[in-house]
Image (cartoon, rainbow over all chains, first blue to last red; front, side, top):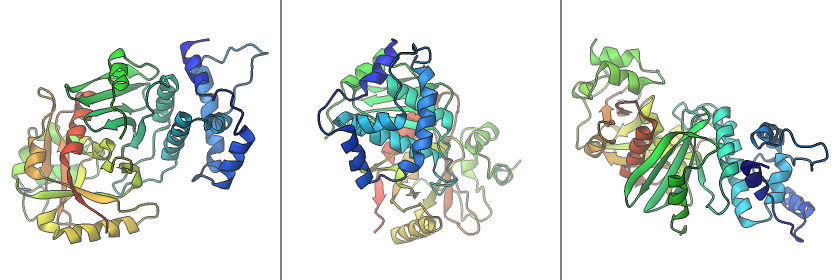
Amino acid sequence: MTAATFEFVSYLPQPAPTPSVGAARTDRTATPARGWFSQDSVLRKMSTALVPLLGLAGAPANAAPVPSAHELVITAAQNGRAEQMTALLRTLIDYQFLPHDWDGYGGQPAKAAALLDTLEFLLQLPHTLPVPSPMLSGSGTIGLYWDRGTHYASLEFEGDGTYTSLTDGPDGYGGAEGVAARTLPAALRHFLVNLPTAG
Amino acid sequence: MSCQELFASVAKDPKKAEKIDAQSPDCACEAHSVSPHSPGPVMDDETLWRLILSPVHYDVATGRVTEAAFDDASNKGMSVQRLAVTGSEGDIRQRGHARAAAKPGRTFECAIGATAAGIRALRGPEGGGRFCIYDTADAADPGHADVCQTRHGSRHTRLQLRRELQKHFSLLIHPA
């Protein structure tokens, strides 16, 4: 099992007696999120695309089935951090379905390649680190950011398999470009570990 | 090629900022009116307003406009309204509501403002660029201007510059 696979599995909730998966599904049906079910097919495509990235393509025949992204998200919603991640994933997927000129300045929806790179990054983000917020530029590039007032970090995914990071803290600016989407450089990790708690 | 001819040739170009910088480096066209519909170049003491027309650009948790909302400055030019030409802050608000109502899915979240002098004073890391402001008016919008980044070599510099813009646009007009 690769490190990436470990991180992926870590998003699954630990066995929890309540609420059951069925209950979670019922709850979501009771208060449907915007466009959620209409995007299930997209989530499945995402899940399929991510399997090889996670090193699961060569899994033995008797291995446990890989959950669909839909199942993954619903099940993951059983703990607080996963709920934040669920909301983040939903927003990122929504970005792909925005109409042309969504921002009044000719804005483009998210680039599919940028979305996949963003997901690849999130899948290896240690869950000891806070969940970032999403952002989208008018040119379709996707960003993630952590804004804690005096400490700010952002990442931008343009869809070429890499991202650019920017940190802005008491020591000034830092960051790097051309960072492989599935990696988290030590300097960025250190900055994120030391983010002040969200107010 | 005159500045007006240059801007007419790249008016709808998604890489307008880069092409202007290549043809007219160091914000040289700031000294001239780039549109026949403009009352004149943007002066340092003017206040410029950016209309935020989508909730995507607004973070309800922090109450701030996202860094990505300023990305247009690095490519097609970041559209802003000149308060001195458009009218009052009430006129800016009215324009925001009208623009939002023109297309389903848009909402007028707010307008954010900054002085032209402050925007022009922003700098990237050593030699890494700055912002020019051009009076890109048209007949229907004589108060329109564009904020355009110079020097397009580094992605990290671009992020740093747009972060500077995000921090500098600190004035706010609420939708109501």
